[in-house]
Image (cartoon, rainbow, N blue to C red; front, top):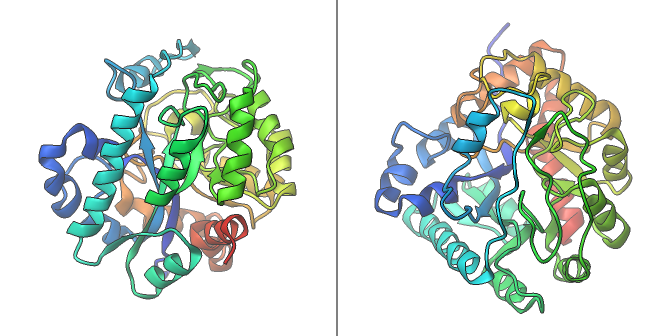
Length: 357
């Protein structure tokens, strides 16, 4: 096959900010020069064609600063891991402010190569000038008070996307456990505070991310929200029966609102056997993408890599593997028009529908 052009990628989810939060004394090596570990840094983003995405602020559970322990248990399905305890708002708020500050430092230290974007005009300007566009995303709303006053403060700081829960209970709702095999129907939906949160996010133009909500919470958002339904990093339950993956009924609901699902690169949500091992070839990735496109349509699927938050297929490896992914999709029969939609056009279109111009 002749050398094909590299298509830029706007990604729905990564956890780089958590790495900076956990090792602030090494942040220059992690972000500016690349330390040879993890999936993302500025030089490798440029090499891989990564032009922007949603940067998650994720509050780690006390005494468990990463998903490493969970992922080790996921090596041996079936599994049903207990949900971590809720995190108090004061603890969560300190972590969120730390990661928001790191994102601001990323912008200041990048010498114009990275920019926090709050509007579509800012994303388009960044793309036109070859600047990486970062959208601030909150993965789990533990840091937000029940009166939602802090939501407005975070919005003023740049927050434009929010998941009410990670896989922990919050005052707003309930996340799915790490369970395989399992339906996403694992408990009650949004609380009254959660329903108020959805309405206030709609009013502020904050995307509501469904990726960690259980099925009842998903349905509550679908019935309340007037914005496109978005699952930033989720896969197809019909292919891999994990509690984290979306059923065809949920996918259809997202399609009906002209929303989007970002394909999660995490191997535990790609492999049909639910294992974590990265030696999977391209077939699981292709099966999930084919299924998502068949149910959602080609205008409502993108990428939600989960870089720096999960084990990814060895064929991708890190952000520099995005061109290899594109080549695999070309060999599978995807043309460049479809690849452009998957890589960046669909994400920008749904953000425009969510935020306005």
